[in-house]
Image (cartoon, rainbow, N blue to C red; front, side, top):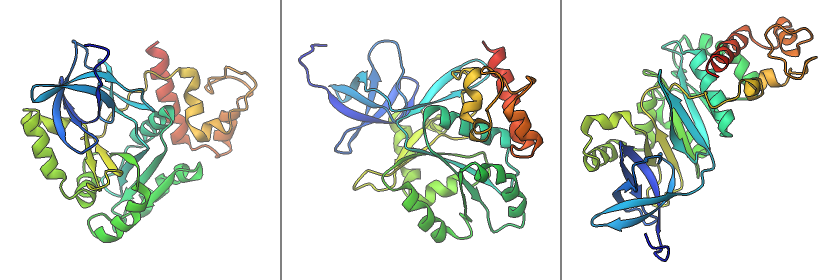
Length: 300
């Protein structure tokens, strides 16, 4: 490519394999492919591209403000970038996994992305137990918003829209928490967008496994929801084990320990363990810390 060619700027709004949907500043969308064999674009990337027939070639990914990773048994992979906030959905029913929630918050903290928790199905009797389980999170400053997305949709919309305005928000939640309800409430043409993108990527039903960007305000295109189906197992392998406690605010505020490299597991004079004994750090949070730490140490 000649260095004199001016490249267009675009936003990656979906991807499947080596095919990406890139949106121009004017709102047009086209299928693009990265140059070369490497395919390291993710949804939310700003890219420089040039036309090639009726498609485009991605020449360059602009520097990212932040990046989220997901992982499976074998590998860690980046999957969303340039986010303004994370919205984690949990519900009164089914009972949520605190370990999944804690990992999502550690991933957000590591990437420097502010996070909020939405506690859905506030109209159910089991809301009290779910609220109780979230007490440690409200105590160290996480904003927990209680909603009834299905029972009181308009009220939910009125609460959420001001919090989302002008931001790119990554929304996640395990099956049954109401994530699809939330997306369809706030982005009414989401289903149509899925169909269009699926067709463009020739990926049919497989598109349901990909991350996707939805505008909530098609005219201004300043407010977006990013959805990645399923509750992602967040990739934490890039975190240094020694830094983990600093990414958990309740542990961090008590980490005035005798030894500078304290693991908060067995050392004498540990401020974190003393706080657990005093009930200032919940036992479940401390247990989750131990589980993640052990994973990080064993993967070195």
